[in-house]
Image (tube, rainbow, N blue to C red; front, side, top):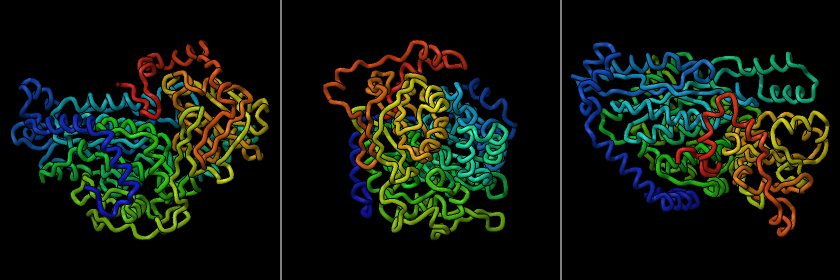
Length: 608
């Protein structure tokens, strides 16, 4: 039933998603409901299977699982020491097990999933494994949960591909009540603005490696999530908006009593669903309305462009079909409520202090821009996510987020930073693309300039170093899509392009690759689909072609006569490049994923 206060455009878009998805969603829910009606895992299992399942558990836990038929939580963890955001999770399983025992239940680590740090692999060949690591994480989550003796699941993860991968995997076990458990951001270090400035100076050769390294270490300096509003922190915003967290837990700092109590509360929350017999499996929580709520939250906060890929894949895993038209149409009515770096100067700690996720969700709900009548992991529904947690003595409590404490960071719907969302769909004879406009100055949203075509990131960097780009130019970087080389992020290109823009040149980037949540002030038309390697029009562009990128009208065109454009041959990916982009650093293992990958707009899915 549609909420009577719901904005008519949000209602219209939701209705068309429901209609478009009807057949697949019905089939998905049939699987979920069938799985939910089975006997509990320990009762279904053969004796040898069950003996294996509990052999590693303490004797008391074995007794609870087998004799007392107590609820058993499966923990899937993405802990490792390579991601600062995941380092605090090392001891989470012990806390969860301890809390479960307090409530007459048990918990087992069902499995771990790989979790790569894009900050480590950025600009290296390892980055070409990044996008498809999402699908590996999804498969690893499925392997963990395939032990099939769990009454619920807790998913421990934060960062870029990890949360979408965990979520995709969990949705294939949609009968399980499931709660996500984050770790929170690291303390604020060197400001993001200062960090970006040092990178630009390094790109110009004005500071050396020692100065650059010192800057980076001051920026990334402690356990916790990176403090800019990139993909990792966008993940957390979206999970709050979908009701899959303990409310308000996204941006509470690691360590300390509050974070520990929130982690324990995740166990209490998922056990509360089981013990109250409230039917809230993740396959029903993540419905069309929840997906729209996530999309709205992404747009209102100028979140990561990666989610125009990832949340399409998440929706698909729940039997729901969304596309970039849905994002674009929502963006036209969803206001921008936050200015967090790279969209502003504040970091997520300042955002949290100013009102955080609770303020944003409350404002969107009150304006009818989010569905209020949704199922969440909490009995109180999505309104619980408008509040902030705190400790009252030793106990958890929540208070309304209140008004903004700093309107330069977060605002209400009545006085937004912009009347529309932070993402824009671009279309034209080059294909379909997206641009993150929330961080692009108004005067840079329309760029018309000659193209310079590159077959790799390094080609652009070499041209910059040689002084060949000191002019108005739109840099086209192709062969960067899912089928070509796994669609790496291209942040290495941001500093040189920012330098050129700073010198007054009109510059932009057009690519079938990704830039993600850290997309900055340089206009970047990314995710161009179909990609060049699939015979997309990007492979027709030539040096000197005038390109018009218009983020106001949504245009991305090569200004060439239609008959001339149609007659052009489509370049093939150079053989040497194809060989280089498939050999070494484990890339051979991902060859089948590249071959079977769908377009970026279809979620770059590699499993169908």
